[in-house]
Amino acid sequence: MMSIPLKRHVHGLVAALCAVAFAIVGACEEFPDVHLDLKNNTSPISFSFDGRSPAVSFELSQLPKTRSLSKAYGLTGDLLWKISRGDTIKAANWPVVTYGNVPNGFSQNSPANGSPPQLSEDKLYAATIVGRDDYRMTMYLEIRNGRALNVTDKVFGP
Image 1 (tube, rainbow, N blue to C red):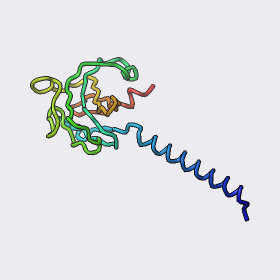
Image 2: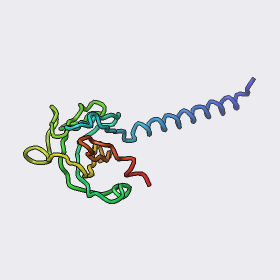
Image 3: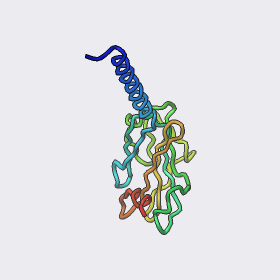
């Protein structure tokens, strides 16, 4: 049988551990969680989205191509196309987006008028979904033999 002071100590310890567990879970829910992937890698290319965090916009930029793709991380380039929503919804609730086609409920921010340029071979592109507080998830891709190829691993590789 436990003594009353020991029971109080155990109950206090359990309460403290529960508080820590709830704090950790709460912190994890606040960590930005947006993802993107190639849905269709043939022309026109399409992107799918996932994640529990709200997403604000999607953009595709052309980056300067370096000899080693591992040097591409952090490069900025020419913004080719950007779409956004007036409100924010979870990335997982975004529709599949085809390059150059503005889905219902979205607006095109760039280019200001007309369609974005065609994507071409031997160029490096960055597709980025932007979440709340400017959190960004970027995929790097190239067009090879008429197909989009995710080269993100090569950008972050050696």
